[in-house]
Image (cartoon, rainbow, N blue to C red):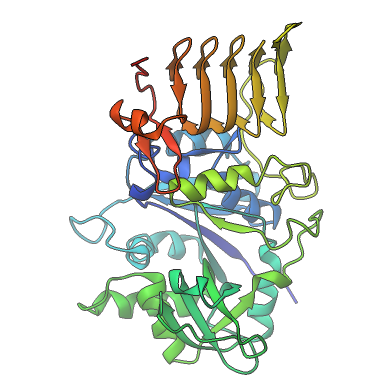
Length: 413
């Protein structure tokens, strides 16, 4: 049996307003993550590691830095027809932008027609996870599904915050697809759990094209994959679920197997970073058998200097990127992106510090996210007094994380 041809479509057009102020100046998939990555690198790496080398990234809002990252980082040789290409909203079908995820694909139908694949894999661009997509494709083909939806078992209490997949007794055939239901349908073999949709879909191409055309004609539709297209296919008996916990990624540990996080809010983004920096991390970036791929800037190694009295440059339980200088300061339980400098007697704890931030002498940063190019003056405190943070114009999340926006001025008082 010949291998099916597969086209990957990455949905990267969302505005990401819940992640503001990190998305004030960039698309959500372009938000830095884990020191050296962008959020979109996780979706693209999963597809590339699984052998899918034809990928279209559908963009819309504030896409300049995202487009630049894709074109400079994800250049594949076209000798064998491989490509990763950003596709902005083109208004091919009229003077309007994407109205939903299904409409984004419908307006980009020319991409599918031009490549004419057997299957289309559709993924979001703002989740942190590893997945061998070949395994969901294998189930899709084995059971001759029209669409196969990747699903993650969650507690029924937590299920109220997700799109939920109800399945038949076989644990696979989808009988319902519900958005944030008050009474989530339980799994047949686990009554305290439900299947949450992960926003990862494998479509047979003919089924996808037909469903998109029918959805486009429905004036009452929101033209959303989860809200409209998948329920349409469920009614036709063409939808099946794939249990993400059965996915076996090369090099995965017992601790990080089955890890998937939607980092669409400040608190979720912060918590996902904290998952990275422990001795046995909940998500292990150091898996060489399934690497997360990105462009590494040409910067020198990280440097830790001074070891006199209380002026000691050190980092504990932290991820420190290239180009960082910890000069007589303390970094604990934090993630530092390239080019950060932490000066003498400064303290950075439980924080995410993005590119080229300067932390002045004796400054304190804790329980905070500091976006790019921020200069923190000597002696300043961020995250210590949340009322003071708000008074200075910083954002504070419901979970108590202070966020200083890109290049934002940090006053002492």
